[in-house]
Structure formats: C-alpha cells, structure tokens
Image 1 (cartoon, rainbow, N blue to C red):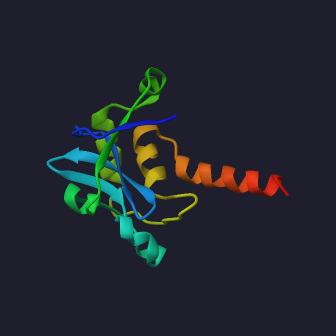
Image 2 (cartoon, rainbow, N blue to C red):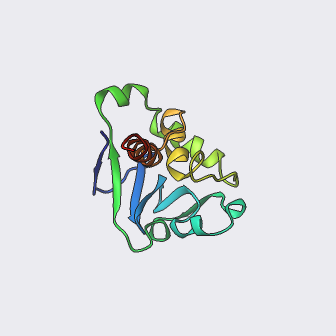
Length: 136
C-alpha cells in the first residue's frame, strides 16, 4: 500500500493531487515546477494532444492539495536517485501517446522513479471490474 503525505516536496519527489474523482501525478523538479503528463483537465480532450510538459505547481494543483509519495525501505532500494528522476522526467518533455489505461500520468511518474510503468489507479479499476464479473 502506498503512503502519501501533505508535505513540502523536494526536487525529485513523486507528487499527486486529487481532482475530479482521480489523482493526477507528476515529478517535482524544484523552483515551484513540476513535469507532468498533461494537466488534470486534459483527459477530457483529444488524447493525441496530451504531452509531457513542465508547468508551475500552482497549475498542476488546479486548486487541489499537493501530496508527496513516501517510500518504504524496500521501495527506496529500487528507486532512482532524485537527480536521475528529474533527468528522466525532463527527457520526456514533449512526448505524447497518452492512454488512460496504459500510458497515463501515474505510469509516467512511476517510470521516472522506478523505470516501470504502472498505475495503482488503473490496477484498482481492473480489480473492481474483475470482482464484479466474478460475482455473476
């Protein structure tokens, strides 16, 4: 289970904000800037237009509250250094190919931190659907 706290981020932190019923994720890079895969409201537009971009934390939050991911000891062993996380995030600016189920903002952030694209939100939805189908 992931742990998140409402604390001030440091460069390289995986951050998120709860907006419109889901969490939007990004990588804090310092100077009140974040690298994110689209803005929270972008998922309702043409997905071919959604890109990885650098933006101000204020724009990322869109009125919500910032949370910082807190890692377990086991996760810390797998996690890249904060400098490498920032480098990985910045290297993706301008890339697209957004897909809600397979390449979203959470996939992007976890890729920057661990080198693995995964989304707990998507996994939870898949699990709920699986459970609903098994009840029939």
